[in-house]
Image (cartoon, rainbow, N blue to C red):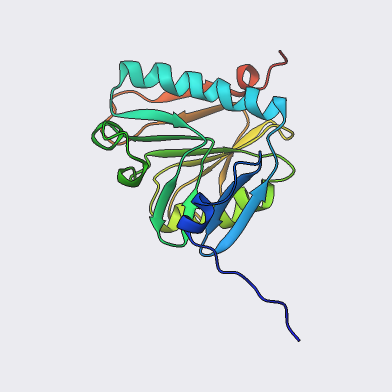
Length: 181
């Protein structure tokens, strides 16, 4: 006798209790992780601040932080740690209208590494997110993925992001990003 497997939908995930767990679903697979570590949150904050400052100078989009409900289909709902959407979509203030991510950023932790590197990375490539950063605090690197990449560019010195329509790139130094508190 086999074990019943539930194929989750975005609506099912939205209905789950607010119990401190982080719930996402990709192609029906439920991803459950505990609350992030303090170092994870600090590392999320640092590129977030840099991206926010950049977007104040180059207003091509708006930065949001997780939690969020980003969904491209009924069986997919993700919550990138950081993401930038075009201003028109951001101004709706409606998660269901935010479908064009210009940048997605995930900071690895022991409980999210597999989903961030494989499940979510493939999804982000399939939906055409132009730039996906996987920030690895332990390795002190950022993997930069694009939709057509088969391997990431592993940045150890400086990471750059130049979205379409931007005159200047954003540059973030790894030494500053990973410095101790």
